[in-house]
Amino acid sequence: MSLKMICVFCGARPGCDSVYGDAADALGRRIVEEGCGLVYGGGEIGLMGMVADAVSGAGGHVSAIIPRFLDEHEVGRRHSDEFIVTESMHERKFKMAELADAFVCLPGGLGTLDETFEILTWKQLGLHDKPIVVVNIAGYWSPLAAMVDSVIENGFAKAADRDLFSVVDGVDDVFPELRRMLVR
Image 1 (cartoon, rainbow, N blue to C red):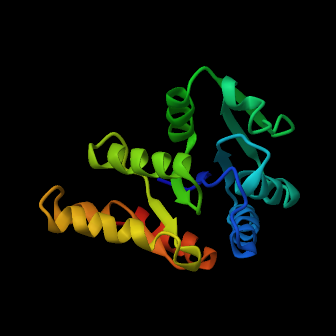
Image 2 (cartoon, helix red, strand yellow):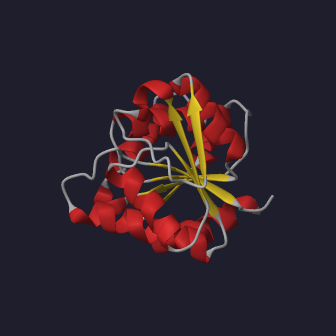
């Protein structure tokens, strides 16, 4: 398996600290430096728009996928290389997963949490075996890692389920970790 298209889950808002936007911009540029394209939720606002703008600005390919009802709310990024409007959130997530070779999770809101947990669950169920890397910018995802550890400790998941994803501290660690996960 090779890395050609990276799906990024992240917020439709910028967050309250510029460190999140800096990470989104750095990840977008790194995606292109690594010879990959971006698959993402299609919005032109928040961290989503920042990642897409960074990929485009560095000359990379952007596949934007957005449900019809969110197209106006999140201001769909119609000037992407590929702009796909779906009929539902479920279809959006399925299409993003279908196009992606790996998943990277930046900070975000409830939608980002939903996407992250769903892609983890799909991997747990054997619906895909693609790498998932969570970028723990400023400790944002530490509660997620603690929650997964609690689920395992309380007998609701196997210890091996902790290996469904990796947590890294910054953007510089994303691609080395994705490559490591590919060879496992």
